[in-house]
Length: 65
Image 1 (tube, rainbow, N blue to C red):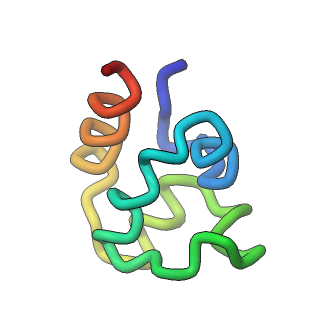
Image 2: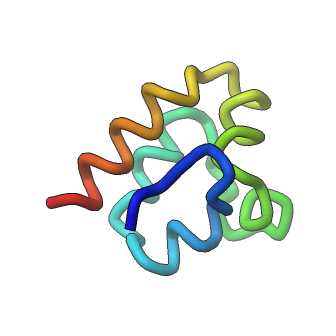
């Protein structure tokens, strides 16, 4: 599976829980709360001031392992 900017954070964590530290590293410390679970990657990056393409590269690299 390739993660894109419209992928929901909760869906990513279901298939790749090992991605949690990446999201926590950008400031998403409440990964279990309903708001973060329903956010897209793009929304999370906008809220936390992170470049969406850089985050996508990290997550997809991790999942591709």
